[in-house]
Length: 134
Image 1 (cartoon, rainbow, N blue to C red):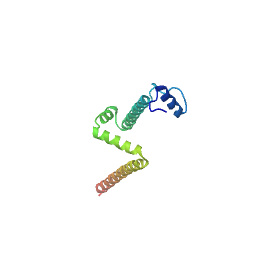
Image 2 (image 1 turned 90 degrees about the vertical axis):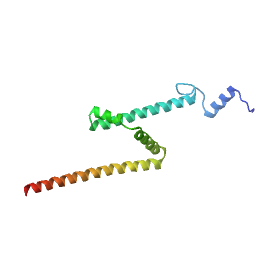
Image 3 (image 1 turned 135 degrees about the vertical axis):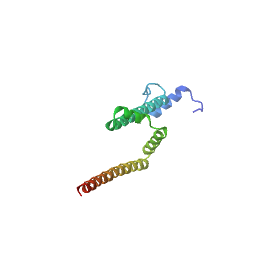
Image 4 (image 1 turned 60 degrees about the horizontal axis):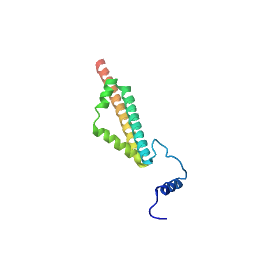
């Protein structure tokens, strides 16, 4: 076989290696373009999903205007940080374990902090009642 292959020979070799003949699935005939388009569509979908989840979480606690202000006032540093953590978590199993453990730790810490605050508030109310009765 010569070093210089003609176009038909290259296409024949690609089809033989692929194991099937026919058109490339996707909007264009170029597989690289189709891959790029698929990547863009997937990223757009993930951004829309993230925005919807953020909106749902914030709307449960705040009114619409406040929730919108919170979403709009987020700094670029916080946005880039969340993207970096998400990339770290999705790239490997140890990354997912580290990020998942960190999130679980934060949730448990916040929960215990809230319980301690409620307990101290209850203690303060009891002491206040006791001093009023005396």
